[in-house]
Image (cartoon, rainbow, N blue to C red):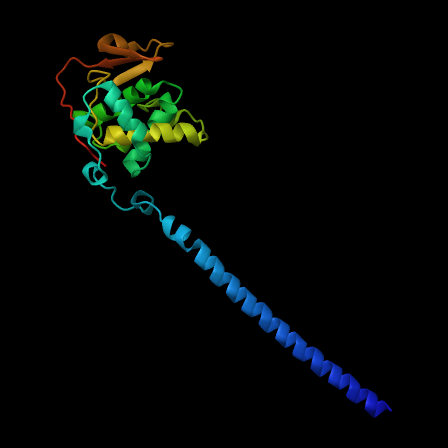
Amino acid sequence: MMVSLGRAVWRALVVASGLTLVLAGMCLAAGADLDGRLGSLLGAQREGAQVTPAAQGGPFPAPEGRGVAISEVTDLSGLEELIEDAAPEGDEQWRCLSEAIYHEARGEALEGQIAVAEVVLNRRDSGRYPSTVCGVVEQGAGQRNACQFSYYCDGRSDTVADKVAWAEVGRVARVMLDGAPRLLTDGAMFYHNKAVSPYWAQDFTRTAQIGTHLFYREDAPIRLASSASD
């Protein structure tokens, strides 16, 4: 009786083991099939989600390579249209200019944002300041009261919290870096908020009042260019 019972139990274990192996095989097959179907469904999306050259850290295409017709822009309305259609992307210099516009003028109308970009680029091209956008924006960092752009050394967080505003200023930065004409500030390399009266303002020529800022230039001849850059 004990022998018969032992054989019965053994048979039951064998059958259970077989069922376990069958079920495991079915799960593996189902998993493989699911992966295959997901790959088929998501293949196009995965291919379409390739990062841009800028995100990869590679060289950003020149304006002509992206179909940008900067030379056709001759007035503010044309510039505004170009900005509206621009892609907010670029390399490190684009990021620096976008950050400057964001922190200095994101609450301004489009003209105010363009004007800040003009000042940064005028400095870059003047031969009197660093020859890159990032160099201009970061000039004086690490020195007490020496920052040329106050946001860079004010001790506040420079985190970009407003993604909509970031995209807007990114389009402005893109077009201005591509060589759009500087139509608003007449060569200005300085500006300040209308709420303050810095001592240096009396030494320069005021060229424009745009939004909440007053813009100035030095009367000495300066070399300015609006050629496209990265």
